[in-house]
Image 1: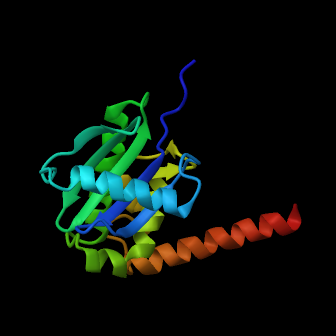
Image 2: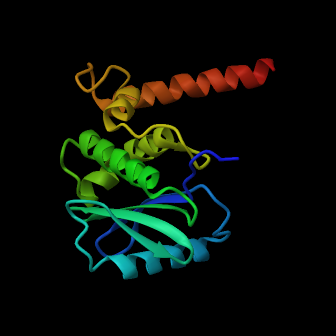
Length: 177
């Protein structure tokens, strides 16, 4: 029986291999030190490649890692060795394009750090608990903005109000359950 496509982690590292935004969906790396060691190893193996125009795929420690570089940011999506590379590549493509749209074509470390909340919300829209939910960048950005790319108000204001509304809803459900 086939299972749902799953992702082990999504990483955004800077040009020196340091964390910008990371999210792990698997217990394959139980400690912070094991996660950082994995990130350092993946970066060391891939940083000299030219994955600027298209995504590259590499097998690494029995994982499939799909990666792409945009400016000074390195995007990685990791899956198990039995995972479909095309699905991992579509997750990477959707995530990197959504980040590009959210940051208004200014994908740099400084801009990413200033908008880290949007990047993590973007991650949450793409993958939940390792299960791939969405890979279309425009659909992801529309969900985050609430009104599409041309909606009123800034994306940050809209995502904060969406997050607050969701939190209120979950809180109310937990109280009345």
